Length: 80
Image 1 (cartoon, helix red, strand yellow):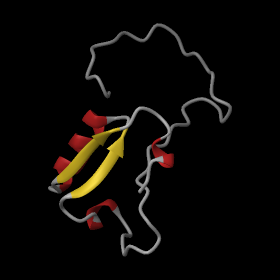
Image 2 (cartoon, helix red, strand yellow):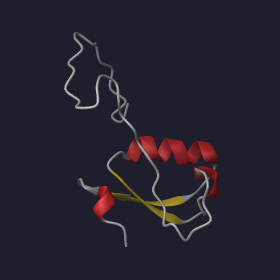
Image 3 (cartoon, rainbow, N blue to C red):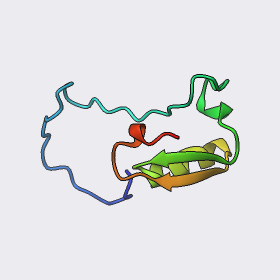
Image 4 (cartoon, rainbow, N blue to C red):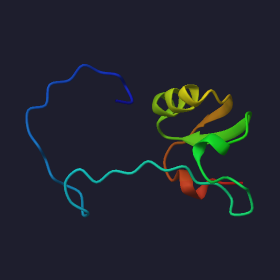
């Protein structure tokens, strides 16, 4: 989905410790912010992600402008 590639699935390869099909992409915000859902993200907020295309589409669908920062792994460790 991230690369918008046209692919043909030829086999299921189960390699997750959690089981087949368990993938979560989450939005993490500081505890002291009054943000209960993605719709509460303030316009202009900085967003770090390893999935820039999915993230861009997600926030565009919400109508929220944001400052996208590409993260090369361990995004959760890069919060200011």
